[in-house]
View 1 (cartoon, one colour):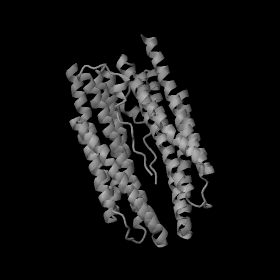
View 2 (cartoon, chains in turn orange, cyan; view 1 turned 90 degrees about the vertical axis):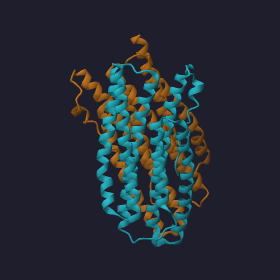
View 3 (cartoon, helix red, strand yellow; view 1 turned 135 degrees about the vertical axis):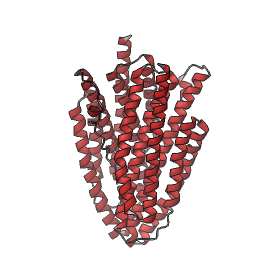
View 4 (cartoon, one colour; view 1 turned 180 degrees about the vertical axis):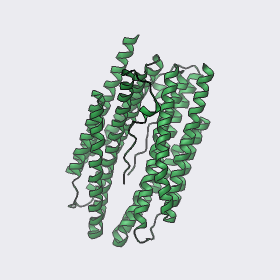
Length: 236
Length: 236
């Protein structure tokens, strides 16, 4: 029975990783679509959303079945709850990729404008965050998750810079207002992806610290649990 | 033992409602702060965030304890999972209120501009959505939750209108670019609050339909569960 349960946990982990792969791919495609003004990639992102939503439902159901199957031990319970939360964040990463693709579709209708903002670089950094957050989940390592939390500050600075530069552009170049606004909203979507990566990293810490506590045979006190980071970065 | 478990469920429900009250209050205060250009209310929203984050942690822990305490039946399991998801959404509603308060703090530094957008009305509609979503949770009624999903379309239209009008303003009145941008971002934050209310309504449906299925002694098939609405509205 225990073995079947363990197989179930492995399956859940694999499913979540595949879901993570889909979400990461969506962000990469959306970033590339922005850089190349590429409607085909936008379309791929929109079409991919259905797959991500389906994966989310299946993972939720699998987690539900695991919880219903037998009474999981504390560490497994934390793991399963972390999976359901990470699952929801990954689905929203997919939503943000869709938002970016929709922005790009708006942009492509307008004349190209040279803008003082490096969306490609920001997009690459954000994709790296999502990847690292998933790695911290695979490895179950708090240090990797902590690194993701630190990267979030870098993204917030990039978003602030983009914001300042683009508002300046809107003020000085009325003909580029709409393009600058599109870029600003894309920067904001990327920042939200980074927020979701941060949430994932926090959930990994919650899960791993729970299991550490258990492995060290310490009682779980309120105090220990309040060490869970709670600063969910909030955007512009 | 069953009674203690039932008391635990009641406690969880009460905690989530209090959390919902805090999140709703934060949105109301942020809306009012926008309308009155009121820095005191902004400060209240920022200070309230800590309480909301604390409530989120406590609810997560309580849900965890309920799951660990004994093997819940399917309907209770769905309820507890719905609570953890709604909890996460309410915390993010609080984040959006903070974002709005920060925008208002930026706005107040600038000369007041007359803008072609009714943020107050949009804010009131969004607050009503959050309240209805919580009501659908209290009552456990799919119809109420469905009404929330329909309201989301209204909010999306309001946001689209605001977007169009404000881009026009930015194009025509360069001196009001920054104020228009602030208003646009506030509209976007409100739309995200509406998205969270939508998520909450979906989680209520998931919970209630699960329990209906169980009460009717139908086996839970993939098919039945795919009736769970999955369109999580995605923003600009």
